[in-house]
Image 1 (cartoon, helix red, strand yellow):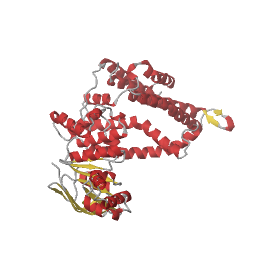
Image 2 (spheres, chains in turn green, cyan; image 1 turned 90 degrees about the vertical axis):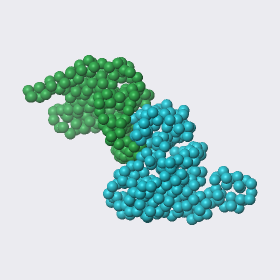
Image 3 (cartoon, chains in turn cyan, orange; image 1 turned 180 degrees about the vertical axis):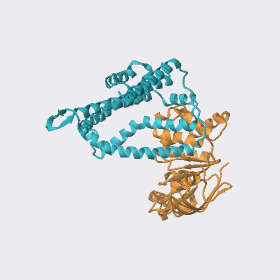
Length: 250
Length: 275
């Protein structure tokens, strides 16, 4: 069973790979990350809600990456032309560029998603405290994590509200993309409003910058400092290697 | 020890606003009383509570204000500039935001409030026992906050501010997510704690007010229309029929006055704590 620090180190490594390794290797890593929750208990989802969020992520990720690739194929007009039905055509260079960006984004977002869906907030808090971070840093960080945790519920609620108003939020892909805009503005507004309310409530409960927050670890976990060091060292080597390549001009 | 609250011609205008959110509010709420602040939406009820809690002065230091707010023996001219927790505790309208979200159980949330109030750890269990007994939430203490129902969450949220045993307790529209039995329960809690806490709560309806309050304040369009005790409020109830849903209550009030010599009428009046 991996501790939070080791898991975070692995996520850092995946993120570094997303910026340093060639696209085919990144695509392979995406497959590894996709199956991580089913391969090891350390990355098992913390709740049924987390598992549902993971499934839903793929629907959104597929839509967004498809749009990203098609947009690049239309806008970057270099290379050979790829003919599509109805007289439409896209450009090969744009499509490849879009694919590279999409693979990178998928790897980064999946690695972070897997970490947060398989780690409860208390474990993160305990780890941040072990690192010696002050309360005024830990609390806002945890509130941000909690916001991410609540995001699927929020989106579902706004979906239901927009659907009740006749918005085609569960229709086919193009209509979904259009309805995305009707979801985004209430999502952003609601998030801002709730953040202010939550902050006010915390203040009214006496939380100030100097307040101390204490978390007791729910269970003692075996730590793997050597594994973390190896993972972070590999990340560092990859970054240095990429900088070296850039200096050589390749 | 409950504190009295006196406001003397207190006015407030948000920065950039064209008109006052509160205009010349003068009232005197005795210690240990339970005061219902009633009025339609946008009357200034929530702003008034924020002014008493200190969050208005703290969040809007450049707001235009006048008058005096006195809480206990301390006069704030014109309003408290800092949040007065734990002397004054404030329960916001949405119980979801009352939970910090970073602690898993209700018990941990209560410890968080106690730590913020600077209450020594050795006294935490005593406070927890007290609030659990008063609120009847022993069974919720070790529950995960994300698994609580709406009514349970409302009770847990109230416990997070009550656990510090404040001298003044403010509720913003506490009946929003409460069914009728829960409102009765809340009224019972208010009566139970009023020996050591002055309570102010806002509402747009009269049901909880008649169940729990002994003083009534009616705000409309930022101004104070009425402040007085239960008997005075009942006498003038019909004045507010345009801004408060009081037609049922005026009928009940008349009926009780008509049947005051009737045993059922007397029993009903006692049940509703009518004069």
